[in-house]
Length: 362
Ligand SMILES: C[S@@+](CC[C@H](N)C(=O)[O-])C[C@H]1O[C@@H](n2cnc3c(N)ncnc32)[C@H](O)[C@@H]1O
Image (cartoon, rainbow, N blue to C red; front, side, top):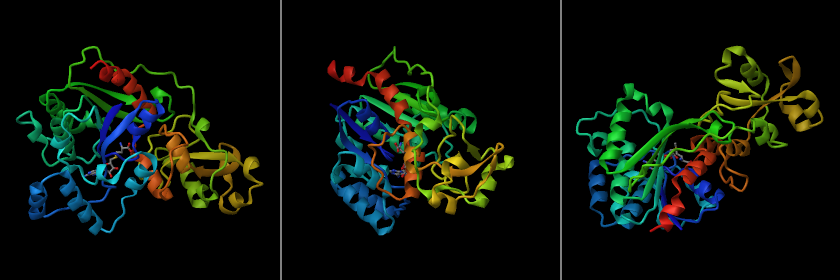
């Protein structure tokens, strides 16, 4: 049984990967603030710090978030799909005391939001990152001492600020005594037709000299293999949308019928960004709901209609199979899948880590 803790948990890509790989796991805790911003006063921060334990801190922070009157839709998705009770859910990484979980976690996973930050490395230690959400992740690694951690972020983290940010981050992980391995992996190299390049850092408490990242797998599927036979007619573009996405000037924002899609992003469903599907007129002309809504235009010498990817298709293209329950509205679902990690990539990493073997050998 793998004891798992996640932060910036989102829709639980690692949870889903473990399940898909049929590995037994238990959620020790998960944490996500649902992209809401909570700013406590100094006085309130001191107050939380003085509270006795996570139960009290969690209650205080949950109350503060509920005062924002914005709902946590990420939590809705998480609770609908994974086995967890409320006491194991934290709203905000900044107020978790990891010491209470010391030695209780085998695998710790998270990818801090890619807020822009510049880190100045002076002391080559944790303090160099104070004030960032990366700091909170590293602090929890230090406090919890998981056997293995996986940290994920955008590939640009490596080159950010001429490589200085990454230098500091690497030093911090090493200063915590972890043996770290890192690589940029593209989802398209692991069975999913999406060009999503992400940095993965795997850290081992016990050095693992022979670890290597998973070998690439030949891509045998295209976007078309992930499409639903029928989608909601509201996904079809009207005249303005059709003209926008077929205009060659917008080629770097909108792509139509590509075999390998672009990186899904949280906000791509607005302003006609992202990937689109062209359907020939013959295939839709008998569907009155589509014909009522969609603009019929010409693309590549053929008449047809253009539509967005559906929520389900976006999830599939992130490696979530159809047993993943969608319980939030369409915009939130697009955001959440665009923010997630490709499940297949995590499955391959997990198998390279040989986590179960590691635990069994003890
Ligand atoms: C890039 S997404 C990670 C998604 C996740 N990897 C998944 O599998 O879906 C970053 C997440 O961090 C969350 N977040 C941002 N600030 C946070 C904070 N202070 N505490 C906890 N979660 C936070 C956001 O709500 C968002 O869901």
